[in-house]
Length: 165
Image 1 (cartoon, rainbow, N blue to C red):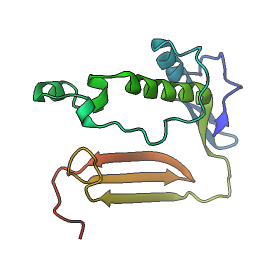
Image 2 (tube, rainbow, N blue to C red):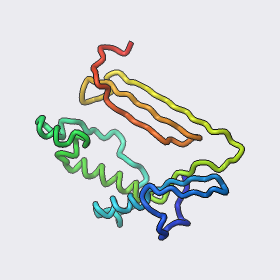
Image 3 (cartoon, rainbow, N blue to C red):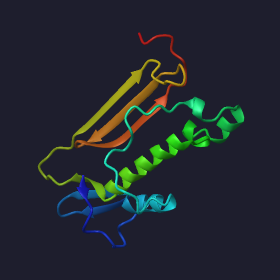
Image 4 (cartoon, rainbow, N blue to C red):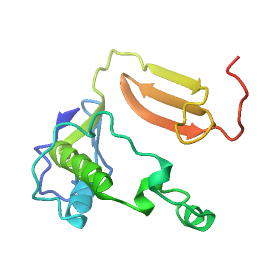
């Protein structure tokens, strides 16, 4: 990851913009303009800069959020806590936004070494009853291209397992 200083103010400095340098075989991915948009939306564009993305040992669970099936239906793709946010939730969001403000000019760089071979690593894991709010297990995976994560996901398993063996 590198700080994106040379592209500030240019038209290519936009959300998820890829910048290519074919002579050096580099692709640079940046989301700084998108982060600027989010920071302005929540009036955090002039806030202090944060150095950690989240507080340690923060306890958020589904009892702090949606309580009826109708509420859950409306926000199926939104974390439980955001339907009924309280002060600890907003404090957590502000901490994350401050961290994004501090790292918005950081971007991913792929390629560069003409002699290096392409390296792809993929890891997956399934945990038994790892969801604190229910009995469902979780499945996780990450795909790494030349030592940089390019895809990852954590999701609840669709069925309930009786054991991990």
